[in-house]
Amino acid sequence: MLAGLINAVRLCVPDEVAPLLSASGRALGADAVTLYLVDQEQYVLLPVPTTTGEPREPLVIEATLAGRCFRQTELQEGNGGRDVWVPMLDGLERLGVVHLEFSDLDARVEDELLHAFAAMTAEIVLAKEPYGDRFKLVRRREVMSLAGEITWNLMPPLTFGTDRVVISCVLAPAYDVGGDSFDYAVDDTTARLAVFDAMGHGLDAGLLATVAIAAYRHARRSGMDLMATVECLDRAIGDSFAGQQFVTGIVAELDLASGRLTWHCAGHPNALLLRGTRIVKTMETEPGLPLGLGATFGQDRMYSTESLEPGDRVLLYSDGVEEARDADGQFFGVDRLVDLVGREAVAGQPAPETMRRLMHAILDHQAGALQDDATTMLVEWQAGGAERVVPDNDPVSQVGSS
Image (cartoon, rainbow, N blue to C red; front, top):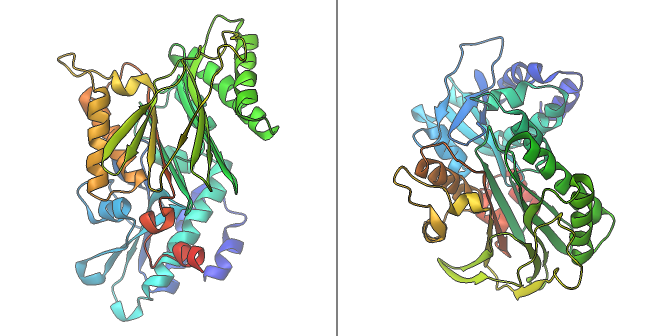
C-alpha cells in the first residue's frame, strides 16, 4: 500500500488526497483515517474534509489526545487502542496528526507502519499543497489580509533541524502580519539567518519586506559573504524606495562545526544568548543604521562575533515582542520573554513547542490584538535536533541514525 500510494496520488488534486488516504488506511487495518492540520496560530487541529464519513470537529491542542500527539510528537492511543493518533512531520516541522480508527485490534498493523504511513502522508500533503488551496484554507480560521498573504508566501517552514542546529520561528498576528519576516538557509557548513522588521504595517510594509527577503536570498545564492549581503540589502531597499523607507534586521551566519556566530545588527533589537535556563548576555554590537538608508560600508556596517557552547540558544526577535502591551499598558518585555523560554527549557520542551507557547503568551498578553508584528527566531546549536523532537520509533529518526 505504501509503495503504491505515490502513484495513486500522482494525478490527484489536493481535494482528493484525504479521501484517497482514508481508503488506503484499510490496508493498515483501519476503518477510518482522518487528517488534521494545525491552524495558522497553532491553537487547534483542523480536519481535512472528505466526501465520505461524518464531518469531524476541530480539536484543541491543549486539551486532547490529538493535541498531546502534536505537542510531544509521539503516537497516542485512546479507547483501548482503537483510536490512534500519529504525528505528521516534515522533518522537525509539525504539520498536524493522522487519526486512525480500528474496530478490530487484531487487524491493526505495528506502530512502525503507522508512523511510516503518517510520514508518507506528510510528504503527499507537502507535494500537493502548491497546486491548490485546500490545505491552506483548512488551516485558516479567519480571513487572511493581503499583507499576510504576501508574508506567508515568502516564509520558509517555521522549523528546521539537524543534529547540529535547530531553527524555530513564529510570526504574529498570523492573519494580519505585514512588516515582519524571517529567512534561513542551511548547508553542510553554515546556517544563514535573518530577521527583518519593515517600516510601517499593512500592504506597504509587506512590499518592503518582500524586497528585503528577495535581496537577502539573491545575495546568499550569489555567494556573497555576510557584509556583502548587508550591502546588497541596503542598496536594494534604498533603490526600490528612494531612501524614504527602511527595514531593521539582524543578518547572521553560524559556523556549524565551531559554533562561531557572526552577525550584523541594522537598527534592530539585540539578540539574546541563553545557556541552560538563563540568559548569559545581550548580544550587543556596534549600532548600525536600518537597511535602505544608504549607510557607508566600513563606517556604519560593523559586525560582531560570538563563540557558542554546545546547547546554547540564540533568540532573535522584533520590537513587537517586547513592546506588546496588556490592558494596563504593561509591556511584555525582555524579562518576561527570557523567563518563558527558560521555563520551557526546564520543562524539556523542544524549540518548536517553546515557540508555539511563546506566541500564545504574547497574544494573550495583548488580548489577541497585537498593535505591531511580533517575530521570534530561536536557534539552538548542536542541540541534538532529531533526538529532541522526533520520537525514537519514527521512521525519520531511524533513517537519520542509520
